[in-house]
Amino acid sequence: MFARTVAVVGTGYVGLTTGACLASLGHRVVCADIDETKVAALSRGEIAIREPGLAELVAEGLAAGRLSFVVGAGEALKELESEGRPVEVMFLCVPTPMGVGGVADLAAVEAVVEEVREAMPPGCVVVNKSTVPVGTADRTAELLGREDVEVASNPEFLREGSAVHDFLHPDRIVVGSNSSQDAAERVAALYARLGAPTVLTDAASAEMIKYAANCFLAMKLSYVNALAELCERVDADVADVTEGMGYDRRIGQAFLSPGPGWGGSCLPKDTHALLQVADSADFEFRLLRASIDTNTRQFQRMVDKVRVAVTGRRGGPLTKTRLALFGLTFKAGTDDLRDSPALGVAALLRQAGAELVGYDPGVPVGSAAAATLDPRMLTLVDDPYEAAAGAEAIVVLTEWPEFRSLDWTRLAETVASRTVVDTRNLLDPAVVRRAGFAWSGIGRQARESPQARVGSR
Image 1 (cartoon, rainbow, N blue to C red):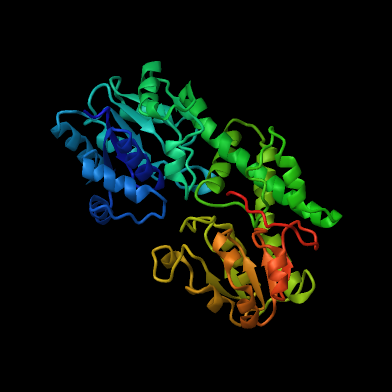
Image 2: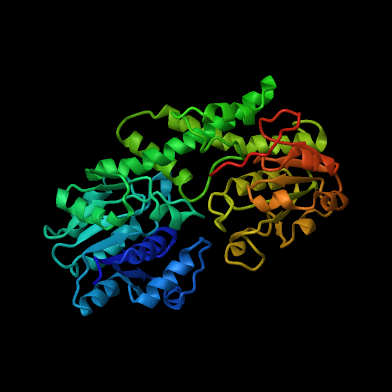
């Protein structure tokens, strides 16, 4: 007997992970999407998303009959109704991209609500799982116009590349509802087997928790990037500084690794969205705004470091300078290029006249991700040694562990100039220098470090 009947609308990172994981917990789940080709592929167990463990969960759910895929939210309701068990909880996991002025675009959420408004069975709970502005639960209830259908907010805290693990081993479950305590408890009960701490609150607070968490992480990253620049100026080593900081349990080790800036599908969108919330409340959120400005400046600072490494001076010309870019995704372990700081730096390097050749293990030539790259900005290749051929410098922009195990002696024979700008402090400087390269990191002293430190984004 299935525990609960669940409809999940949207099969992106959040929706597909939510559906597959809930099915693995014993619930009957129907996932809906508007893309017919995608639905057909998912129904065959074909997963386009690079996410460890997800394909296995989808295959398991399909085989057990706990998971299925349909076109359209309305069809999800009909399928469960035909089984004699109407939907009890519907998750909205549709895109909420950043719109004009940084406001989240809720067009997809509103379209789904309009589609299912009349068909929802009494007693069902509609759950906003997409990251949405504070007040969206109230707006959803208003659009539904159904006193017999309740609304809740259940934000996700999934990291790309470890989404399945994060879902099944959560730090906390947050559910907020203005409809009733019962609605929040019914949604929380879906996760009961996970044994995670649960926060039951009102809808606005649940919506705010998501933004507050992501924006705090963004501020932490901006802080450590600024700290790295200060370390360079006072001849301190940021790796040692952050190691010393991280042992403080009030601070922790996570998100204390400097890099080319923060990006991805969440942090840029969520920081701007929270600024909009603050502006609408007539509150000047100076700390958050400064964090965003620091991040924007970080891209240019990486370009300046490349200039110094290649020309010997900060304002040195990069016109027709061939550069090998190692890493294009916003973090290792994913093929996601959305708001990637690597591409932000690449765009500025290209604007400065550099000729760019890029390599990324997660973005092979001919892939869907590769198709989103502008060929006028860089040439994409499938081999790091090909990317490095004739380059004046190798610029490491994403923290793929594979880069550490490259044959740096072979690379030294391939490049035009033995220069490495490591914007992730990923590589072991001793290994790179033994191959004859000049190595430049972020906030690091010239002395060799016993190990390269890799952070989480």
